[in-house]
Image 1: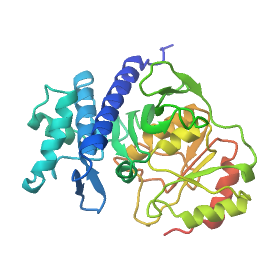
Image 2: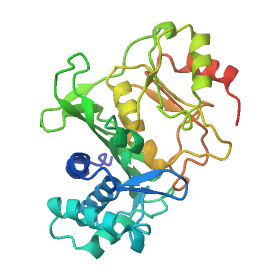
Image 3: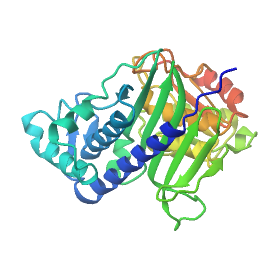
Image 4: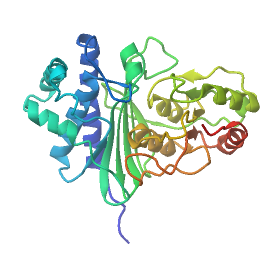
Length: 334
């Protein structure tokens, strides 16, 4: 009988890459946030930190795992345009502080490595260099999210949440929480600048009326109205916790919340791999459950987007089927 593969090396290197990216993000917030934003064609913002974090993680993975493709959100075409030369210079300066051997063209090539297509065979990494860019711009929550996918299945995930307090009951405690999970090994959390890990589990709540919901801050990302209707059916009166990025998955995995709902607001919209891969395995390995709004497992084998899924429901497991029933009563396909 063959032994299950060990991901000790991948786990260690993924954590190192995410921590390095988080350090860059903190540096950008402290020094170059104003003026370091470019508007993408879809109207969403991309910052110096998005580019720099992707360059660092991509270069790190290329050195350690040169045969592994990368599926990521950004590419360097905007940085190569003359009108964005100043932003490119700032990105280069922040990257050089942490990776001084990377020159400008190597940095741009590292960013462009993220254009891989994914798929159902082989293995690849998927990265969101800043999940929750608007939260990052506000100085609120965001995450650096990295996951490893093999044969269409997520096998490892790391979430770096630099602004998320390690202990939610201690508002003066340290900021910076890092979550990590490997398939079959459970989920753990540590202080971002520490080394000691703590195993985490989802909540044991089984009364939906007591559940605390988690949802996106932006109503354009998820229909707040439909989430409120689900909450009304379930009898919960607690206001939803609105937070940016995959920090929502971290809160669910460690038991701070019991549900995360994401209703699509456009019929054509499909979720992307990098927005959910790391968070999904961290919740699952903590004992939770993640599906789309029809109860189907998330399918990470169909390319850069979750083409076969619509919306997201993540829960502590015990509440999942009850919430799915309520979702079917209120969900209106856009």
